[in-house]
Image 1 (cartoon, rainbow over the protein chains, first blue to last red):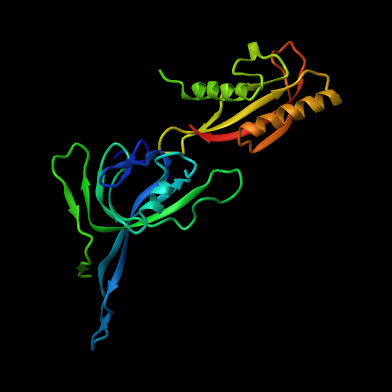
Image 2 (spheres, rainbow over the protein chains, first blue to last red; image 1 turned 180 degrees about the vertical axis):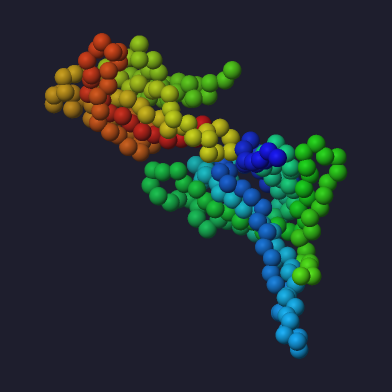
Length: 155
Length: 113
């Protein structure tokens, strides 16, 4: 069986209902998911233990961008400041293939408007995703929703 | 067929020429003192395009005496005022195999293309 190696390349990242394309600023982009224990482990009389269930903690659109605050228009950094804590639509295409869409809450990256002198400046961002992430596979006619609401999975 | 690095090289030449610096992408037309813009090293580490690691060669006529020192320093300083240069290294450069090596600076500059 041949190895399938996916790479983040020739992708698209847009933000906003009227999509603004920031693809050319992005050097790293991904969907992060986190899970938490749902309750505590329970030990019974015989000594066996029932482990806790698991629930979705949340998802986030995260990555790294090249700082672009010197751009006259279309700056990702300026967009974050202008839309701080606003929920906006996003569309993320990692490469020619699956398209992920949903809503996320913009937060200004922890480091913006500067850094080291005379080198490429980057900022790490993480926007919490509100609601579902809709994954549309390449050449698919149907979409598949991945729920982001807390959900218990029996161990 | 596109040649984005070459096109960007021509833009850099225009930028340098606009600042009063003699610059070219072709060693055949280089007449020191001048800046030679050659092909960059490419790193495909950005979403669109690539990172170009330019190594511009600032050349002055030999021999490597104080006059050359002064001219080379002035030329390199002029380039650094136009481009966000990260490093300049003293070197020697020969425009053709049968010509003597000339005093030069290898000027490093990185940008997304």
